Image (cartoon, rainbow, N blue to C red):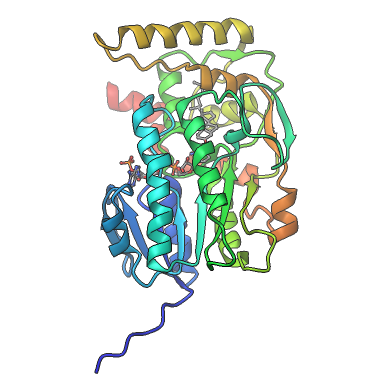
Length: 351
Ligand SMILES: NC(=O)C1=CN([C@@H]2O[C@H](COP(=O)(O)OP(=O)(O)OC[C@H]3O[C@@H](n4cnc5c(N)ncnc54)[C@H](OP(=O)(O)O)[C@@H]3O)[C@@H](O)[C@H]2O)C=CC1
Ligand SMILES: CC(C)CCC[C@@H](C)[C@H]1CC[C@H]2C3=C(CC[C@]12C)[C@@]1(C)CCC(=O)C[C@@H]1CC3
């Protein structure tokens, strides 16, 4: 007679495991001896021992198949923040997260770790050493932020010690590192089109950029500390590099590391923000005729011209979090991981 083994606490699923953060998380979990199942709309790699389930997280039946015998789930799937598709954000981040919660509860999952975002409290104005008790943004700056707020509320409210279903939300900020499809590629593309000559504002604004391995470390610590008697239940935690840096110094270090010039000329913040808002309206008006994707969106200008850095004291206190890679080392490793985006290489490829 076949005996069914009890699900192991080292068996987990990563929803969004094919993405940038998700794949780093899967790799670390495998290193730590976890048995990992990936659920994602696409499969972008293979790792021996990792099982892939391709599907949409809005499809409960597909999720239920992937969550069999799984006690721990990481949910780090989301449409790309740069997409301006309100319906897609609502479907995936709100309705889809509701489906993830229901599927977890039906499958007997005991712990759910959500990747939220520190931007759930960001309204486009300065945040200095922001703590987790800051109120959610009343006027979220874009559809991404609006739906990340709803998503986080859904997950935290679902936490129930009585039902044996524990939840926690990790709020990283400005994730970067090898294989990131956003920050470095967008930066290099903007520089190659000659648009990275300008500093928006006076350039003194401090921001958190968080190395992907620190974000992964925060997620795994949260999962391992999430117990019925722990303070983590139903709470949100900032995870950062704990080294706020001037936005334009960070950008300059990455650009110079890849052989591009650092931005030098200053432009007034409100002028650039006003132009970005006008451009955004224009793209909305012209959408039926042409699809334009402006580089300087109001969200990006706000992120580039204001202070936004967060305290991770709560994560240090409740889960013993400390960044494992310093900002200096993280920038060096990131720059080295993009040899194909170096100015000399791209120039050579063109000629
Ligand atoms: N990058 C950053 O700076 C920050 C990110 N975050 C959060 O971290 C998480 C991971 O971000 P990141 O790794 O950068 O993003 P990625 O886009 O690289 O990864 C997300 C993954 O989820 C997949 N996905 C999207 N929609 C669905 C769906 N309906 N069903 C199943 N899978 C789906 C994506 O597929 P596809 O690519 O085909 O859409 C992708 O593989 C997100 O929740 C994001 O909000 C938070 C703070 C900062
Ligand atoms: C064109 C330049 C002014 C800026 C180029 C770099 C930007 C692409 C990035 C700088 C800060 C980044 C950031 C995010 C995406 C990429 C940047 C805008 C997020 C919006 C990703 C999703 C989040 O949850 C918050 C991030 C904040 C920082």
